[in-house]
Image (cartoon, rainbow, N blue to C red; front, side, top):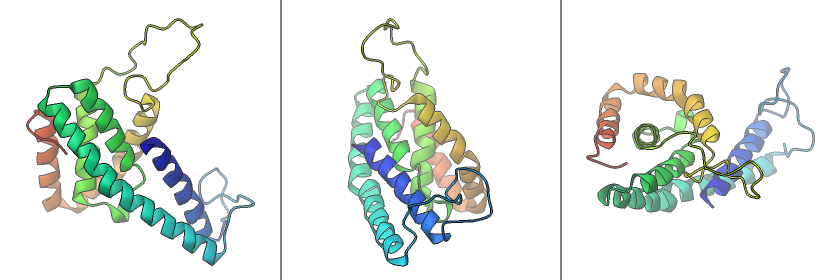
Length: 189
């Protein structure tokens, strides 16, 4: 459900940004600034979608994030790195769509902690042992999230996070201490 909610949020953001920009800029490409016929661009529609996005974001950063934080602490406490990797992959997804202007220290800390934890504890692109003719193929591996999606997300946010860390040096210190505690196994998100 978390992946579905994040995908819905991604589409909501696309439509909202498209509507806020008037739906057309002199630009080529398939970005939210490109012309797309049929998307809502009216003020009332965009306002309603913006409100829906805010409600979804509150739920993801609130109850869902709290639940996942509890699960990751339990996984670390019980020395279950595979479970910890699954939870951290989903935690990272929750912070995938946070715009730079809305980033807070906690958001950056959780996202970077997830990246570090996965880098240390997950064996990337491990073969599943299935033959090519098997009925079910799972691109999500053991994480429950496609590894390519995670790599794309981590790479796409890298410069944004680096910029945030440079612009917030006092908060960056606490964020990096938190990430270090995750890397050394002494703490959670």
